[in-house]
Image 1 (cartoon, one colour):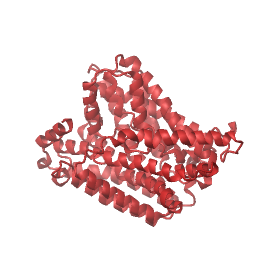
Image 2 (cartoon, one colour; image 1 turned 45 degrees about the vertical axis):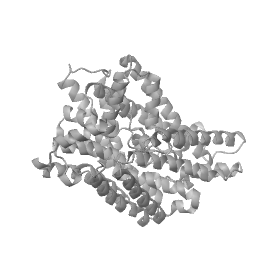
Image 3 (spheres, one colour; image 1 turned 135 degrees about the horizontal axis):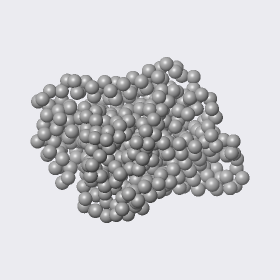
Image 4 (tube, helix red, strand yellow; image 1 turned 60 degrees about the vertical axis):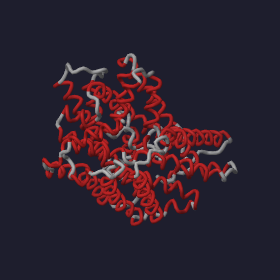
Length: 496
């Protein structure tokens, strides 16, 4: 997953609400340069949070970032551009038009459901980072991590339920405060560190360009990069705002890909230069590197400052977007009656508090796993993988819908038509399926844990959260659950 802040990581486009808001902005500002669009896309995707995950592989992280960029990032960006330019409204509209309304609900449900595991993993990162302000030893303490997750999440629910809008600007600073500044500092410190003649903790020779092959487990970390790249589809709604979409949109996406790769790869390399792979924490790796660099340069007093920057950006993003993913689900459910009336209720501030509280109860249960399972990094990895697995369902449906729409509605107006659509969708589908399968293989860093238990947890999370629950909602729904007038009111309120 990506990022220090919520918009750059999760939500990066995963909600119908954001798709509609982006469409509104595109209409209000009908001209957009391709460079501006590239920068917008970069800010939606780029992050540092996944850097420790790839730093484990040292120089091979370059390869592990490039492969999913080619087979997943590029198809996602281009295919979503065609869909957005022809069918405004986000993934629910795309999948409903191309496949069916129930599958459209499945897609938007998975956009929401992945946050159930995403928030605990994001807040586990926050807890580990915050530990460097209090006591670095706490970063590996599961009970401490669980308490921080629960306290911060419920605080976020309380703030969001009050309809507070003062935090709306926080996300715009997330890329700068939580990614660009610390990322640049990390890389510069690493370059100076190596320039002084210090040996890299990870080998930087040509023989280490590819990950060592130890079976499928050696490739598992590549799966996490699929979710790191998710969110490219958000800014596809702006394709019609370009002067010449057919030429400018591909240029914009290639530039964004280059910038995203730089932001992902260079900090990961910098971490691998100073923290040995066998000592690297998947949650606290960024702070481990800062701590080591600052200690080397005798400026250890900067460590808490770096931690506060990362924490502030992450919390600002989370608070800003906490209610976002559920808003799109709420509106669609009111139109079609997908959720029971209890989950459709709003509080006096117009916030879907019942959904947030229900999600919070599940988040609390998940947080307790950090206290019960000794290795915090293992828990973090498991939840990150479940998040990826659930969200891959969205992309499988999106690629399938794009192929079907090209066949069933070939003359439907599109502002942008993808060249070789079937090839790109085929590559994207195969890559997503491969990632889905590989996600069930424990990574080589997982240690001596039970393979069966790992597969059971990942598979159970995917099946229950991504398939059984939405199927139950569809099977049990009643005509009285539909509230189209209320859904229209929600939509009008968002546009106000």
